Length: 488
Image (cartoon, one colour):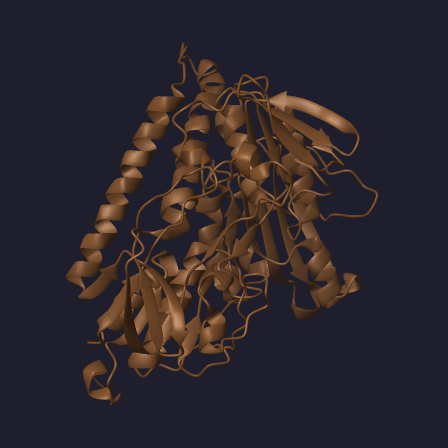
């Protein structure tokens, strides 16, 4: 049996104190409380430079996954009208930005309230104050009016997440917004410049274009660094085809406000253009440096991230970190949640299982969704040797696109297999509508070591996009074009 020690017996106010009320922190706190521990969560949102703030739940709920997916869906509904015409519908709808944002914000606020209720029902103390270290067991809590108090805890979990990096460009904080702001803007963004080439940039640019705005993406080099580059190029091509403009090989140098409130953008070559909105999506920085880690003796990289070991422990035995604040961590909500729950199980439930950070599925919610699990081509060549890798590929055209003459064979599936292990599938990449829904199921097969033969032996569901994963036979070869789709 696990020894159950009371916080008060040990002389501390809490058994576990969690800094940060995002997905990981909340998951850990609730799991720990389930073991009868005295647990508190401190969550306090510093306003963005543009003044945006929000409630309990962290990035995902307030300024990430949830509002992003809803606005992505809104854009897809508009895009689908052209598909509906070919199937007999006469649709002529218009979009109301303010109404969409109000509906999304109201839904988010309901989630904030739900999280508070859930914490209370699970006996977790919620503290709406900013927590920072006094020493390795003591925290200072500061409320919005500057009032301070101190609490102690046997174990402390840092789950502060990260915030957008505005790049330090002249005029950025005065003139630009970030993903912290776009989902709460009541005013339509109008002509928009999105700066950045990672998934947040492309997702935002995609739904803004789909909602009818004039959108340009300023790209320094490649799209979606760290992802399969063939897929990244296909995403860029589809977005351009759909109306998003790309300005490649450029970075901004400064921003200025015009007399009428718009933003004048400069590069090293001079004035680039004037925009109603400039959205900076050039990366995120962990919030480790915000909480006075030096007072507790916790090591960090000076750039907002904390190194941890395989048990999520920092260099201090009683202080742990999970989620986006961790150095080298996958910045994904389900990863933070699973890590937090596994940590609580080990600390208080007698478990020994470590968090498995390998083969984590993910989806980029660009206009054509990109779902993936495992290695990209470039990574697979490096890991297993190019001579051991065989790649199966096929274009895809969803059936509901068939009666829309403007649609092409833009969707795509790729299976990456290791010949040295009986063509074990080491990577699946899917570019199509609802790719996230499909790749979730495929991820299970990849994680248990399925081979190409296992995929081939699985009967597909017809007519679906997903069935292509079970029927793809075309081997990708250098210098050869991909064969076109056949019939049914």
